Amino acid sequence: MRFMILLMADKDTEAGVMPSEQLLADMGNFNEQLIKAGVMDAGEGLQPSSKGARVHFSGGNVSVTEGPFPQTGGMLAGFWIWKVKSKEEAIEWVKKVPMPMLSGEAVIEIRQIFEMEDFGAEFTPELRAQEERQRAELAKQKG
Image 1 (spheres, rainbow, N blue to C red):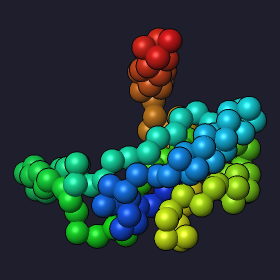
Image 2: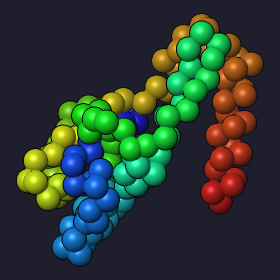
Image 3: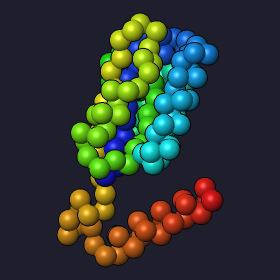
Image 4: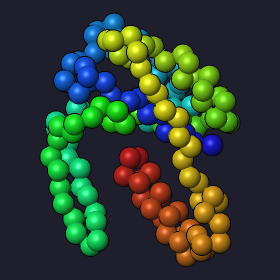
């Protein structure tokens, strides 16, 4: 099973406050544990929304809103992608995350990633083959 672990933004991450040397070291050590356990596929911090954009689709129209965005609730500061046996295992790993926010409060959301077999009959053999080709190409590019 794969899960995306989402670190929610707060006022400090949205203000572009950089993590301390200690937090960078703690996160580096935590990521080392994840890698050694064969859990971590990816993980990155995200720039504040002031450096981003939102693209809205409505009734065939597309519009773009430049950041910053008005609310920190629901915005992301970073993410990991983990391979674990269960949601419970992901929860246990998340409980070990070093406190990522200066405020001493953080929200981390855990969301399971869809796998090909989750889509059922609508995911035809042709679509599966396309997905496999795309994954192989991505792996080759990372190679």
